[in-house]
Amino acid sequence: MTVKWLMHWQPKPGATLSTQILAEACQCVESIGGQKDGRWRSMLTFYKPMQRDPSVPVEHPRDFLGLALQEQPSKYYFILRPNRIVVEADASIQAIMEKLQSYKARVTLNFEGFQYKLGDFQVRIGKCVPSTSEALRGIMMEVEYLPLSSIEKSRLVLEEFFDIWKESISKKSLPGHFVPIESNFTDYGLQDRYSSQHTAVQYAACMAQLIAAVRA
Image (cartoon, rainbow, N blue to C red):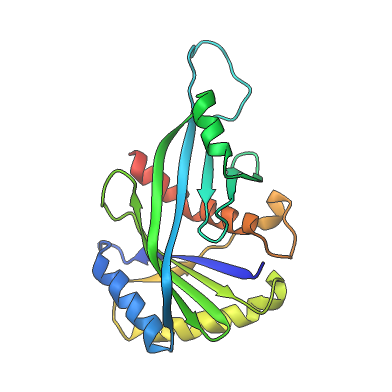
C-alpha cells in the first residue's frame, strides 16, 4: 500500500470551523492542478463495553476505536490506544459485535468529502461530522504518494508537497492551517512498509481530541 499523511485543520485561537474553510481548501487543490476523482468517505466509531454489572471487574478493554476505510470495504480496523494495539479484521465483525452485545458504539464520526488526482498524489479533503448531526467537528486532509510504500523514502517528497500546499493555502488568508499528524508507528509494532493499519493509527491520534469534544 502507498504512503499516506493525514492532516487536520487547526483554527487560530478564537476562530471557528466552517464549511467555507472546506470549500476554500478544495479550491486550493484545484488551483495546483488537482482533478476531482469521486467522493471520499470513512467512518470512525468509539466503542464502550456494555457492562451489565458494574460491580464485577472486567478484563476486556474499557474502550477502543473502530475504523472503516472506503478503499478497504472488506476490512475493519480496531485501535486500542492505551495498549498500543491495532488489528485488522473482516468487515463482518461489526455484525458479530452487534449480536454479542458486548460493546456499544457510543460515538460515530463520518468523514465526507472529495478525492482529487494530482500527478503522483491523491488528495482527499472532507469534513468530520457526528453520525447523529451535521455539527462540524473537524476538517481533514489525506495526502497519498502513489509511487512508494516506504515511509522513510517518501518522507522528503511528502514534506516538499506540504510546503507547496502551505504556500498555496496561505494566499487564502484563512484563520488557521493544516497540521500533519505525527504518529509513532513503532509503538504499535508497525514497520516502515506502509499499510492500512498505519492509516488507522493516524486516525486514532488525530481523532482523540475530536472524540473528547463530541462526548463532552
